[in-house]
Length: 244
Image (tube, rainbow, N blue to C red):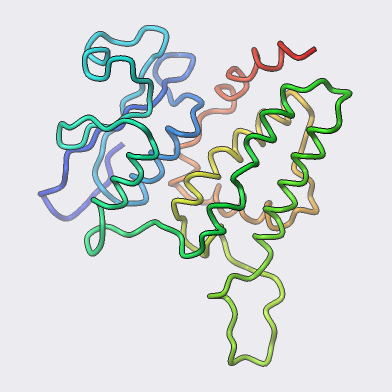
């Protein structure tokens, strides 16, 4: 994947991500997608290499021994640990040439922090155990309340009309931020896997969550970095099979 920039002095960036079951296409890995989105949103030129974890090429074993995707080559220097890579990219690919992606509000990062853990417990639980489904729904409710509550920057204190419900597109406003790069890949996994194996749909009354997802799927940065549904379904087949 190569994205244009006007300057000829761009850094050399290669992102290595998990390959799908065919060994070539994008595999199921929210952390890989997170960095894929960050680089795309930065508007920097970069390439993406998918790594077949079943038969990892010798050259990649030499490049990053003992390391699983995602990892990054930045001007020839190996970068591992997706959190450190994200911090490095935000610091290095900075204005005025590249946009900052950090959210204005800390809560935009915090609100979805437990959602994936609750989903993981839910999909491993037995169908008769409703505790984990209720816990997952509570996290969705928390996210929905946040998305429907106006952020400070949405409130016009000089207006006589109160802003009661947020109309923003994403977690922190109308542009994608690092908070979205973290949460959206996980939401996509939950949406696909929970429907496939638990017949679980995100409740329609969570209007903020659905507005958020619809806006996200309307962006190239998210839609085109998502793995195919079959990759997610295959990834959770063994997990579901171990339920008792």
